[in-house]
Length: 113
Image (cartoon, rainbow, N blue to C red; front, side):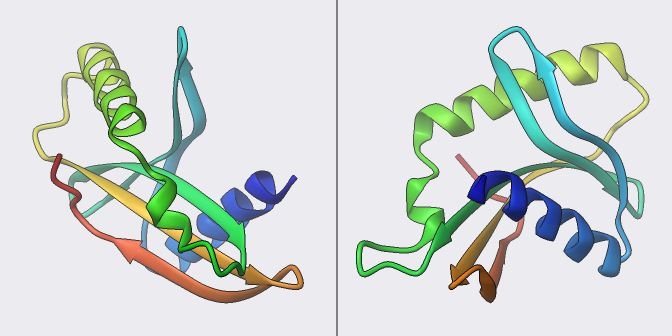
């Protein structure tokens, strides 16, 4: 429930930033990309993490290497199916909620892994 709400917030946020959303929850086998979006001819594969405020860390701390590897593998398949894209990047949008209200949206742009 929190994850779905966070993905809705992230979609609204990136549209406000001038992105065009191409797909949400795009799947191939066991891999899923939360948001695939485009801006200025760059294709963005976006992982969204949402958490209620907690003393146990930020939402982005929960994006582990295994998840980023799955995101990369999904991107490879997507690009095989959509070879027109020449520039891509991977992003993480971390949303912290406090009593179900947005406390912070942190966009980690062009993640390298």
